[in-house]
Structure formats: structure tokens, C-alpha cells
Amino acid sequence: MTQVSDRPSAGTPHPTQTLQVGMLARVEGEGGLHVEIHDGRVTDVQLRIFEPPRFYEAFLRGRAYTEPPDITARICGICPVAYQFSSCLAMEDACGVTVPDHIRTMRRLLYCGEWIESHALHMFLLHAPDFLGYPGAVEMAADHPDVVATGLCLKKAGNDLMDLVGGRSVHPINVRLGGFYHLPTVAELRAIRPRLAAALDDAVATVRLVSTFDFPEMEQRYPYLALRPDVGYPLEGGHVVTSEGDSWPVQEFREHIAEFHVEHSTALHSTLDGQPYVVGPLARYSLNHDRLSPLARELAHEAGLGVTCRNPFRSIVVRGVELVEALVEALRIIDEWVDGRPASVPVPARAGEGFGATEAPRGVLFHRYVIDDAGTIKDAQIVPPTAQNQPSIEGDLRELAERWVALGDHDLGHRAELAIRNYDPCISCSVHAVEVTVHRT
Image (cartoon, rainbow, N blue to C red):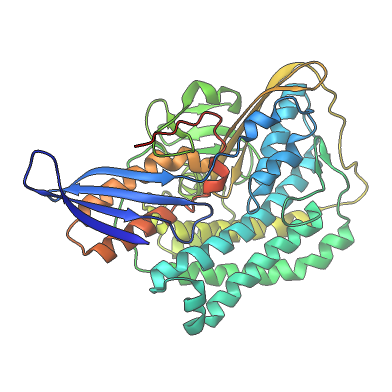
């Protein structure tokens, strides 16, 4: 609900206008927005995250090194695979183990399923209503039933793929350190292929649909950060690259990324070498456009995207391109898969520190673990994408509020929420900070 009030500000006759969005709609988790405007100028913007902290890093300490894939998956029901695979990579790094190519390939296939269901959910049910003029997907379905049905079919295709490879679509149970408990067979993969091929047709139509939306003009100035693997578009790993031309291994992320508290958020904020930055679809696309499949690259061009995209409102188009990319990749992997290979490799415990990162639908997800020689976790650190994006979200809101300050209260509040939904923030993923400060007045 959006609330606006005028009150006298101390020491001046000019009123201070406060725009208060008590609970953000169509985002995962609980958060609000606070904007203060004094004498026509924006003086304060806060993305208020008040969802209770979940303390995941704290209760990972003392657990066995084999447990993070199952425990961290519970951080999010929409992107559990991201947490599973980032934890696997970090723990395998600590133990000095590299899994063979076929296991990395199957991880990529499961990750494709997560991208498909997550992008479809956000694009059709959370973000499209903003552009089509509806308060939500239910109201939109009354006038555009085919659009909503397409979104639900795409999401189900992703869920079905996660069911097959991961054992279930929410908090998959087939993932383990070193690989999987079992691998799907060629016959099982070929049985699901027609559903994914049909979903690819829907995804192509989706890119063409969302490219016709009316997008406010804006260009982000922040550095972009994403993973870049040796081959292919980034999903399940790679080294870190930025739009500033920097490149470094995941093991160095603590040298560049600093986490800190702000009073109005139970989730940590992050900076890259001291400044706000952006992770997610825009960063991935802009730093890996050359790695897209020919079909995805052709659709991006047809949709009016250049080799980079810095307008956050066009993120829905970039997600559509990534939806196509995930389906193209899934079909490729299925067509090339062969049976008869081991589902996992041993990962014996040893004392050490390990780092891992993958590309969650919302951006790079970093994990770090320290274990002793018995495999007991001594320290854990998880840096989710929404926490990394929070300073940039607030920066976008400040710029847009200043640009739209003359709008009526309802329109300004609506556009502010739209700007937040550009990032598809997963607030629940972010609120696991260990230190909590409460101020009471």
C-alpha cells in the first residue's frame, strides 16, 4: 500500500513529502520503500527490508561438509539449484576436487530448468502486469488469458525438467557433493524433449511480445559484474568479469566485494571495489552477448537490444532472450547425452577454504566455506544477488524519483515499484545476515 504525507520539516517553512510503500507487491519476500522529497528534491531513498533474518551462515557452522547442498537449497523455493551448485563448487574447491565434464553438463541441464521456471514466473506473473496496465496477473488473465496460459506452460516446462533431473522442482533431492545420486537416462530425457521444444516456440513468441512494451528511457551508470565460463553462456560457473574490464577468479571475490549493514535493512548491502554495481540478466547479457546461441542472438537483435543493454526497464526483454537460451541449451544437452557414466565422484574431506559461484536467475551467487580435516564447517559466507543489487536499486529509485517528482502520488509510487521489480528481487534469499541492529524510538 502506498501512503503519502506532508509534514513541516524542522527549521524551514517548506513541506517534506514522504512516499511510503509499506509492502512491495509482486516480489519474492517482504520489503517496503521509503522516499522523502523536500521542496521538490529527493532527500532520502530506502529500500526497507524488514523480513526477519534467517541466519543460514550461522547454523551451517558445525554441520558436516556434505550438508550445504540440502540446507542452502531451503533458502529459496524458486532458485534452490543456484544455492545447491554454488555450495557444491565451493566445497569441492575446498576439498581439491573437480568433477568430470558430464557431471558439469548435467548440472547445467538442471540449472536450465531453474532459469526457465524462474524467468517465466517473473516475466508473466510479476512484471508483465506493470507494462500491460494491471494490478496483478489475475486481473491481467481476464483480458489476456493466452498470455498468462503461455507463462504457466513455460514455468511448468522448467519445473518438469527440474523434477526429472533434480528429483523434484522445489528443493531438489538428487543433488549431492560430487554430482548426483543418479543420472537420468537417455530415454527419460528424450521423453521430456517434446515439451521443451514446444516451450522454445513459446519463448520465441514471448521475446517478440515483451519487446513491444513501452519502456521508460534510462541508462544505468553502475559497473556490471557477471561470470564468464571458458565456453558458452554463463550458468553453472566461470570466472568473474566486469564492465570495467576487470577479470578475476571466484576465489578472489572477498578482495573486491565488501558487505556492510545499513539501518533500514535486515539484508546486507554490497559494493564492488567501493561502489554500487549490478548483477543479473543485464550484466550477464552485456558481458556475454557473444556467447549466446545463434537463435537467442538473432532474437535479441530483432527485439532492438544491442550487444549491451543498460536500461533496467528492458530487463524483461533480456530475460526473454535468456529464456530462449536456456531452452536451446537444454535441448542441446538432451540430444548429446549418453548413458553409462558415473553419477558422482568421491569428495573426501580435508581442511581448507573453498569458493564457488554460479549465475542464479537474478545474478551471481557467491559461497565460501572453511572446513577442518574432519569435514566440519567452521565458517560460511553466502552473498546472494539481491543483496549485491540493493545499493543500485536505491540508486535507480533516487534518479527516477527526481525525474518523476512532478507526478501524482499514485503514479510515482507505481513507477517506483516497477523500478524495483526490474531486478526481480528475492528478498527472502538476502535476509540471512548474522548481525542485527534494532533501533527503537
